[in-house]
Image (cartoon, rainbow, N blue to C red; front, top):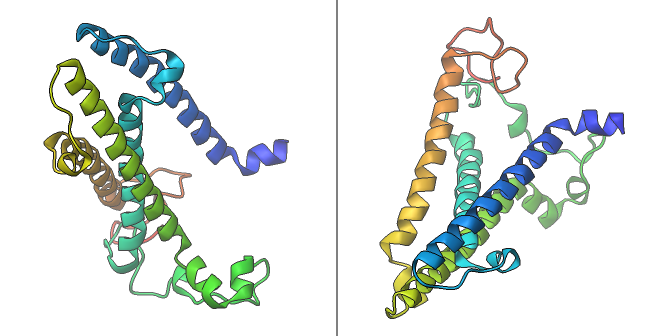
Length: 218
């Protein structure tokens, strides 16, 4: 167990933080949703019923959507673009290990590498494919949840409901998306630029403390 915790400590801690913050979101989102409904003369939902509301789906997946978009674009763009001096960038002046073609003879190589063919072709891009797939799934659920929440509010006000075709161009939906996307792109810009000049001893996201600012890569 000690070995397992030592080998997986980073993912375990972040997963526990995710669960903790998700529970916090559910508790306060549930209270906020019912407060809004009651103020508009509606009927409060149960905690179990809250999970199928547009309020929960929209607020959860609009955030997941932006995270997966940020990570997918970062993985893709760092293949082709460089930021001189940043620990988050490849150094285009030398050969990088990640650019090397995979070899099935390498000890411990994953099974798609050993199989070759189309499996290897997919596996070579599997990280990007997975992140983009998660983005599109989250984007779709966000859209569904946002439309559902919008129609619930319209229903409480006695107004006509929105169709999916009409809502895809609605300012509310795109406001929800862009307000999250811009914050993710800002965070990437910050880590890329700050890692040029600032250091954190012991972190693999930082260059060595004594490395010159002009040195690119970790």
